Each structure stands twice: as C-alpha cells, then as structure tokens.
Length: 465
Ligand SMILES: Cc1cc2nc3c(=O)[nH]c(=O)nc-3n(C[C@H](O)[C@H](O)[C@H](O)COP(=O)(O)O)c2cc1C
Ligand code: SF4
Image (cartoon, rainbow, N blue to C red; front, top):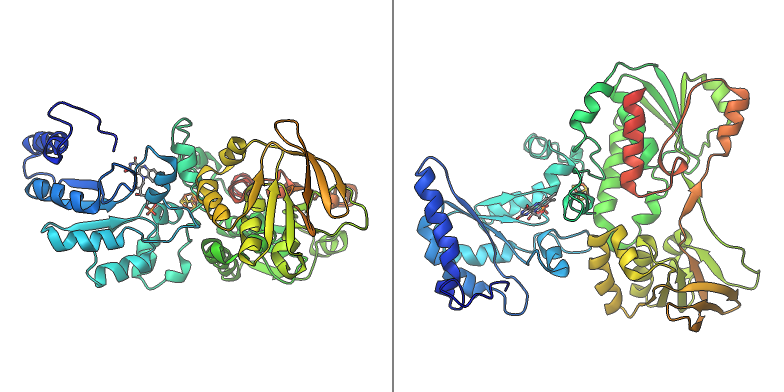
C-alpha cells in the first residue's frame, strides 16, 4: 500500500516483488547455507490498495525457494488503527493471524510460523491442529520469560500472563524510543539498573498495609529476599482497585493476571494474608514489624454534589451497573471512564462521556488501548465530548463549555465520576507519631497511576530494603 513507485520496482506484482527478491538474493549470497532466512509478511494489509491474501500467496510462490521459514502477521505499521492488528491490545481477539497461516500453508511448501496474541496453550493447539508449523510470541515472553519452560513442565498456572496493555510498545516506539518496560514484569529492561540493588535484605519482618497490586508485588519481592511478610487487607478479597478494572467481560487478560497474582501470593509460605483486616496502629504494635509498607491505594476524587443528584463513583458503576439509569453521563474519559462507558453501553445504557482534555491527550495516555476502544465505543453509540469543561451540576443535567466555547446542556439519569484517585495515607501520620520504624509508600498511595506504576514502585522499594 505504501509503494507508489512508477519504475520497475512499482506497479505490477512482479515489479513490487523485485526489491524483496533482490534483498533475499543478496542475503543468501552472503550467508549461503550457514544461516536460515526467516521472512515476515503481513498476509493481508487490510488497507485500501494494500496486499490481499490472494496476492500475498502469489508473491510467496516467487520467494518460496529463497527462504527457509515464513512468519505470518497482518496489518500495516504506518496506520495507527492497523498497527493494532500487528500488536493486538486486550480488547481484540487473540490469534487473529492463525486463519491466514493455515490458508497459506495449503499453498506453500516451506515451514510457516504465526504470530499475534498467542499464549502457550493457544500455541500448542495451533501446532497440534496443523494450522502452523511454528509459533512466535513477543509479549507473552516479555511478561514472563519463563513461560515456555513453565508450560513444558506442566506448570501453566505459574505463568505470569501478559495483559496486552502495550505499555512495552508505547515506550519503545517512535517518537519516544525509551527503554522497554512491562506492566507485570518489573525486571524487564531494568536488569542492569537493578544489579546494585540486589543487596541482602536489611530487615527480616515486614508488614504491608493493602493487598492491591502494589502490596502483592511488594510481598512477592520481599518473600524472594527471605522476609516474612503479613499483608493486611481491609476487604474480603485481595486485589484492591484492580478488582473493579477486571469486571467488564472484555477484561479477561486482566482477570487472568489478577488470578495469577493472588495465586502467587497465596502460594508463598513466607506471606501471611489477613483479609477483612485494615492495618491499624494496634495491629502494628502487636506485630512489631521492622519495616512497614503502606500500599493503601487511593480514594476516589468526587466533587461536591447536591443531594438530589443521582451519581455514582466509577468503581461502583462497574460493580453495580444495575444502579445506573437509562441515560448515563460519565465525567472523565480516561481509560477507566472509556471502559466503563463501553461496559454500560453493552448493558443497554445510553452513554455520554465528557472530559476537559482534548482527544489527542486522552489517547496519548494509552494510545494502543484507546485506539482499539474508541471504535468499539462508537459502535455502541457512546458519545464523547472532548475539551469540554463541566461548569455546573444540576438535577438531571450538567452545564458544560466545549472547545468552541459553546454552553452545552448534557442530560443524565445517572452521573458517573471517573476523575481518578488521591493518595490515601492517613495511617502514615499515626505511625510516625506512635511507632518508630521505617515506612515506605508504594502504588497509588505514593502517586496515583496505572498498574505499571504500582508494580514498578513496589519493585524499586523492595530492591532497596
Ligand atoms: C516491544 C515490541 C517491539 C516490537 N518490534 C517489532 C519490530 O521491530 N518489527 C516487527 O515486525 N514487529 C515488532 N513487534 C511486533 C511483534 O513481532 C509481534 O508481531 C506482536 O507483538 C504480536 O505478537 P505478540 O502478541 O506475541 O506480542 C514488536 C512487539 C513488541 C511487543
Ligand atoms: S507491557 Fe503489557 S503488553 Fe507489554 S508485555 Fe507487559 S503486560 Fe504485555
């Protein structure tokens, strides 16, 4: 689709194939039979004027004798929406290139490898069914480099799942070119930076207040260093804010990750878990820890609203969608607001979102996720008012000013606030006043952020103590 040449490298398929063929011939001339050549291709570019599967198969016949292994993907990297096909985020299906590989295999004699949203289990099924000869995985291995070894040993339950959040690519892709980071594998890209921190444990006994992702990651890291740890969690279950985020059906990847995290923590004999038990000064005095970690999360930011307004905090809207009326207005169109909008729209609500920030800024926060989510929201009729500031909340409608300085009247039956959280650290002052020991803050109670921030903040502190 991007080849606009009019010389003998453009136009007919034969001409367009010439560049690839010349490159392959030159490589073969250099490496002879010493190296195998793997050729990666988008089976379909899915863009107007792009390669179709039929044309791709024709092209593959031209290079069949020149390569040793074919590697099948789809989409084009130059289009943000089609790049989603190459690195499918969590809302898109897994294994969307498998059918292409299976079709290509019917016409192509060399081994065929397939890539795109595969797990170890899917990989095995694909190869067993003969749909491909090999599989390739990027993010599954980034999230847990031991995935293959664990699967082979029958320990699939221990594989730390990739949540397909695409933080890894957001950071490494242009224009950032930052070093790679992963939301669930905090060691990725920080291997060398961490070497000096792999020091011996400074203490032996830690108490963690809060069993959300930061608290659980902290417990795992400290257990690895030989600590005995007690997690105090005020709710009946571990998970913290992540429990709300896993509610929509389209969040299966996150559900798998949360289950893994809870399983991992529960599987460690060094970690004691106290549920329905908020950390208090009394408990601290009784436990006498050498170090305290506060992972108490955040509390929702909700503006002053008069009593006659029907409103919900976004977490409650997710947990109790039945409380939302037919017409829902969500204030705050970050990722949580957008996911909640889709969830409620799927449940038959008419949903409108509004946010002060322009759309580009919203997308910038989680580009791959939002680019996949926005079309799904549109399909469900969700309306989004970007660059729109709410100026007054009335019974049944809000007044807002949009980017063009127009006064809007946005009606609702239920108003939902998705405005983030502020750190919850009331206990810190009490501890400082009455129990002298080192205290560290991690996760939202240090600085509200995404899962990646919570996991990395816990990891960084754990390495230091
Ligand atoms: C951090 C990262 C960097 C990538 N860089 C490239 C690249 O340079 N060229 C390429 O063809 N694909 C690249 N990919 C795409 C992968 O090859 C793969 O097609 C994609 O991630 C889907 O597979 P997965 O679901 O197993 O991650 C990259 C993927 C990731 C996660
Ligand atoms: S950053 Fe997200 S998408 Fe990338 S490997 Fe880690 S969990 Fe998977």
